[in-house]
Image (cartoon, rainbow, N blue to C red; front, side):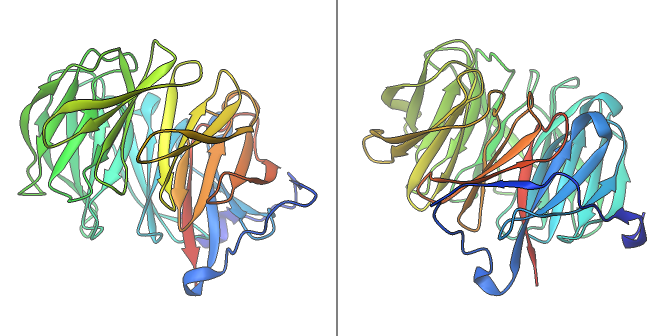
Length: 322
């Protein structure tokens, strides 16, 4: 697959929002582009964040369900139903490698230097290590359950993995050898967990798969610091500009929280089905599984624009185009 197979498209015109704040998408020396999964169409859609214009579509294996940017240069796409992972390169993407050594790959997190990526495999109960320089699987760690959402501590030394969409436990992995994660143990959240994310202040936010709340952890002590009210489960979380962004796809809402206290600063309406939420270079993205939209928000949670991308969009990430 090469760039000649990247299909230019003028469809899916963006819906601009009057008086919306501007997104400085040309920061850091390049244009920012969202890569969005078009799950039922077996494609990745590239959207220019500055204008909302659809730049084109890249054909993939069936069912691209998650996508994670690695330093804004590469992205890892999980095809859960196909037991495969695709590594793509560039904001105008091309396929570098397809790896098929998986049961049901779910989500990805990468090391800060971009060398390794960790992919959860819910069917095999593993975290699979990819060496992105060599585009190959180099290790598998058994975590004892259906691994799904995951996040690295801000130090890069540990990895937290939610063991299910309604998980009774979260697995903790040691990354002192980043190519060979080692299972340290598990914690039992005060509810059935769904997503996990590490805030810039080092605290872990764990969302719920069965209740209208989330928990904020001291990862060193493995204890709950705060239990916060949230929207309908499952919630998802990301962080930008010293704030936490929590979505409830069932409610069609995105809440902005202060990190220190967890206080809600603002709540923005987004399309129903906007479950996953990702941050990249100051932009916040949430695609809708139900509506196939991509909502682009500022680092303060203000809705900038909504773009119709596909019939169904499960995930999105941010890439840099120099």
